[in-house]
Length: 216
Length: 80
Image (cartoon, rainbow over all chains, first blue to last red; front, side, top):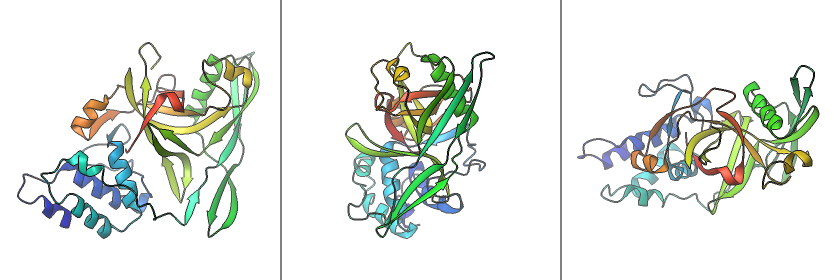
């Protein structure tokens, strides 16, 4: 591989280089940004143990996922051709192309979750309405309705949250979203949490900050 | 302060104003994330030093699955 020849003469190809390449390889058959959760990767099993990269690598990888593997390797080759340079400094240069917009984009679907709590036996039930996703392609708007899957443990977490904040029975309705665009630390970020995105599930990850004394 | 790598399962907002007002400092416009956190915290300094870090994801529904406000708790995206 061209990229690996960059490090020829050094002890070995850095692990993060191999990991970046695997990001491109794993696009098939499991879909964009998805890991095969039954696959063993260097002895590491999923999902109990998972590999975490920094957010800089995440952004760099996302910017390259839209291109072919050969293009990505060539770009990485140019960026990291001087291994003496600081790795973190070089990673900052890997920014998405400003003029390389997708011809199809996702605006974020919504769905309704209705909870019902029976205060007599403290049992609860919930129902989820159709998800509505909007996509735009070549200026043609289309609306797609489908069911969204919410795992029971997630539904239980929401129910516990409601219990802890004054829910004393009856029904409660909330809105669920499959994606969220927001500003974090001065950066524009898009998070997705959906079981259906361009043919596969996509659940993003984040660092959650808990202050001392809060439940965890 | 501790940082926990977490998987995002859903984004939700609450329409019950009374309930929302019982949550300190939050309004009905705030969006919450339902997350599944790691068992142990992972400090950013360790992540920066190791570059690739391992952690165990928690599966206790009452402990590791939490509803948290996006703006105040989710500080950085991760590639996993």
